[in-house]
Length: 560
Ligand code: MG
Image (cartoon, rainbow, N blue to C red; front, side, top):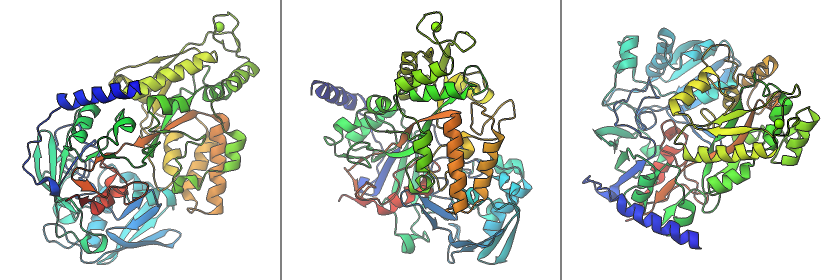
């Protein structure tokens, strides 16, 4: 109780300190103020460089053929009316009729053709689709057929809701450099919002009242979205408590204790409060002694108290990961083989960690409290996370303590983010925590293709598998899974084999599921997505609008 009042007092001071003036003159009953996905002044709206584009560019303005709801595992036709495999190597996309670009031009098969074809002509972020498709054909004004040379079912189902469709009449005469370098101010799409204005610390989107989806899905509640650049979670919390921020997608310590006092909503009323969004994973340099020994790596897995991290560092706002690392959403958990998990899984068990070490020759010969390698060499390892990532820094300290308690000499270190990135991509680290491309998706293939990526044979790697774990048999199985139809007996069999290899060989250790951080103020808006009212996915991050953020907007209702 004492600590509660201390937190309450500190937060009250935070509110006073951050009495930021919300200078806009918009009618708050019609305006949604959001934050958590904008870190700089908005300067880019180019859907060909989505990693630079202001959040909303893809989703609010440029739309995808399908959207995906991870809560119901629903791949929903959006710009498409339907999509189907008409043979093992042909996928037919039928488009909705009556969709127009904001400038009045008709949206049709030419736009879809252009979006595919331009990535064949130029080297673009999604040109790798041409590794597995061989052609795109216009069948009719509203039908496009994709011809596959390799039927990568899983990769394709992900692509369908990732790639926005671009208006060919705007982009078709641009050179590759023009196309990649334009800021594309005043982006022009088919979507439910349009560019209205931009300020040093905000992006203002205005509702497109002629949006084609109004009659099909419902009209979005907010007339405007004022998307704020907010410098940190303390500021976001102060704004939430004063009703100046409606939707926050920040991780905010303290929320579980104070949310009811300020009428703040989270997806779950009680722990874990947040939906799981991605997987924090311990990567080890799998080629460096002693981490090149799978027995040593398994001992590491048993020495980490992920429940303590979830409860203490995150105040139970996250959940410890299961042994397979697969987040328990339908699309992923349907591939978890429970027998494999039982037979080969791990959990926090220091005695077991010590036993594995002893059985495999790791003993403390020099009596300094830490084991040496079976050859008698000293072990001294560093676990790195970026400086300033306070939750991960605390987690890393707990992990290092757990490892030292079983006799593995590990120290937590906090290099600057740029140094961390360089070590992650070029190698030279011992252990690190990362979650870069482990987000919930339509298929666990995206997770395996990242955590055990086969793209490790270059000086600098960017596709995951930071420990450069090499297992060609496993790499082939992940490829085979991609080729197996979703839900087929074959796909489940391959999934179980992948899980068994990852658990037996333990190249990396799943730690906890980072949350889809979401706190909402009920001062102006209501009917947010919650467990009792699952009307969307509560995210405004770039790349998440089309996985349920749009549904949140459609379902929001003004309080007054
Ligand atoms: Mg020793």
